[in-house]
Length: 239
Image (cartoon, rainbow, N blue to C red; front, side, top):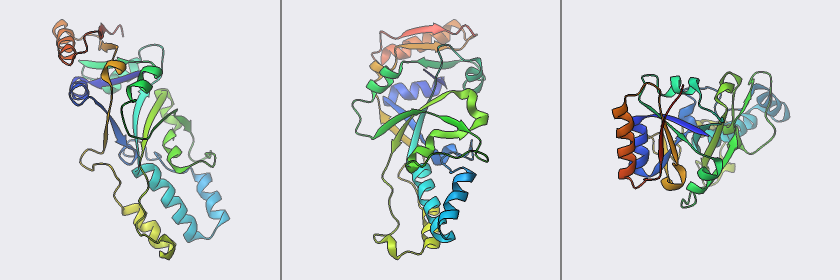
């Protein structure tokens, strides 16, 4: 699996000893369907119950997925991806960490966060629907136009905070409004959360983008060693 980034994000990873998980609510800026029910699911919910309770159910589920779930995303492939290099390191001097699923999983052994993982499924949100699953699993569905990403996600889940201690006393319409405007549990200035990671387990092989000068390769190696990761192999991309 691969995670592509620019040099500054790589240094941040080393410095913090943590992987950044972006709030799904923030990821919606790139894909409007992130953490949302497809049209057919919404129509089904509205068909089974009156409008206000149906809207409240949708708002609660989507809020739970968007505001209370954060994701760290990896590209699944046996080889490098030219498309990923162009997307995440368009100006060159980029970094790609190559890791196995087992390495990634073990790197989180020291965290107290509730983490789950799964492959992203790509669907047509106008013509397909998702199975009746728990709301946070909406974070594992994206629009089919992103299928080339071949994305695997590690997600952090936080408990949904109700806007009132006795939610039964809140009208459905008011509950819907409150869930939409209620801030999520992640730091709004960061747009997500840093999760403590064992870098020695995570980082074993690092690629630098093709065309990067020799001094850049040396700099990446030097910075990596300063964080006591002497066994990491630094390689030049062939793409």
